[in-house]
Image 1 (cartoon, rainbow, N blue to C red):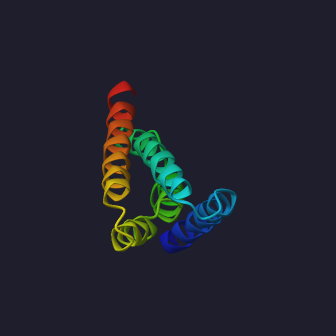
Image 2 (image 1 turned 90 degrees about the vertical axis):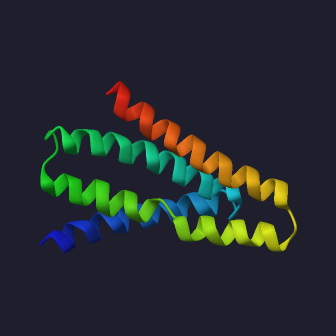
Length: 114
């Protein structure tokens, strides 16, 4: 039954991710927004999960399913490599650094503040 909850959450996460990609015209910014907001949501979800304020079903739906499908490391990697192949090294470095730093900052802040 756990697989079903993860799949349902994943369906909605992937649909929202696709929507953001379309709205951002498949630009780096869409992936960046999805990864940052997904990190914030995952930080909140992890907080409630580890403090036993979330049921296992909600954790499977939101934390694993939704956030797992919504955030997209493969697209991040592909876009980064494309920037490198295009010799846009500064943009690639900024994209990598801002994605990591901002995501980690918000996850940390979320966990500490909550």
